[in-house]
Image (tube, rainbow, N blue to C red; front, side):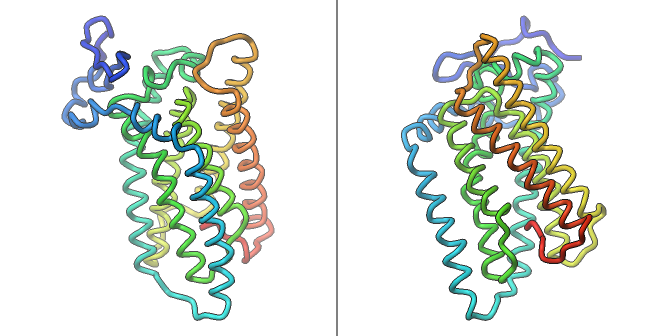
Length: 289
């Protein structure tokens, strides 16, 4: 049975904010957490993101240059196979996402069952999800958007079609996550938990495909999961906008809410278009890697 907050001794981060670990409510989980995670303080990383607002734009500019410059260079060259490096890269991302999922999803479920919906998207991040073990995996998620750009290396080097959805998704996610970290957006846990979950499945699927092992699920189920993620993301942004417009004090910047809403809705439309082209009209040239 879950413990009551009144009986628990809170952790305190460097700002003096109290927070509780999930295993304090459910002691049987204690052995699945490390002391490093429980005492993790995300303040330094939020400050780093806030102090370096230009850095993600520089990274994205270099990434886009590689996308199109790399394709131009590879036009006259033989494609690389890279089957096994691609497989192991996908396996790594799948395992990483799985561990992120098992940290963030239970925390989100706990918040949804013990807080009001408004509080789950309005309470300060460092209080509701951004400190301790969950904060550690949220921080890893944010900065993992930089190495995830490496996905495109395999597409370019293997001379596979590089569709707009692929590079647009990578660029906008990185910029949005960086801004969310810098401003400590209170809505972030929804996005992180969903993305970890979808990526754990998606990259696992890609690993099996690269190893020429038939996945236990059809490809369209991943696309459905992605579309569902975009729908929920759009809803959270709309709900945040409504609450803030109604006078509710939420610990998220309005520009973050608007950017997130535009981003998620554009993803929703693009993934719907991708799904129609790939599974309804059966276009062989459309593949999201």
